[in-house]
Picture 1 (tube, rainbow, N blue to C red):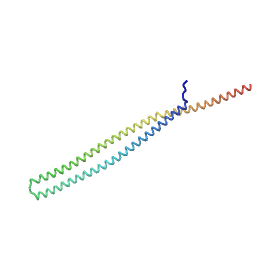
Picture 2 (picture 1 turned 180 degrees about the vertical axis):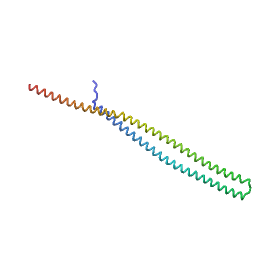
Picture 3 (picture 1 turned 45 degrees about the vertical axis):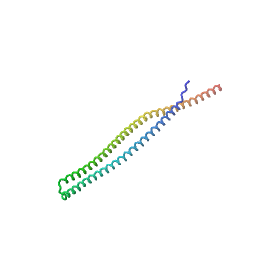
Picture 4 (picture 1 turned 90 degrees about the horizontal axis):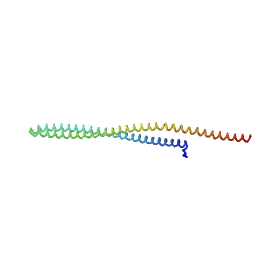
Length: 195
């Protein structure tokens, strides 16, 4: 003969499992929200650093351009003085061309370096945006899963409460039945003795 555990044990077991799963989901949700907040804080600080670095680079670039223009102006002044001092028309154009070429090469190198740094920062920014998008998708997936689990858990909880109520009703009926049987036995016994 196979004995089944009482309904109260099954109900208690189901309630315990439901509570454990609820606690686990709450812990998982809290950890995920903490990770999202941490990633958001890092992204904000990175964005601030990038904007500061970009402003610094733009300032440096403008300074170098103005230095180049100033150098060009000084060179043109020097050349005009040289024209007056050195009337040799063959050497002066070569010197001017060399100075202009050097200034042009220096300015071009600075522009190339600045644009390379800007491209690098834009790539990093794009990578972080992709990560944030993936985290947001993961967050919405986790919230959907949590909602589904809650949706599955709620009917189990209601069923468990219903079974608990049924158990209480059955125990009450069993108690009444035992009391009634005891009263009937005592009445029957009394009536037999009186007869």
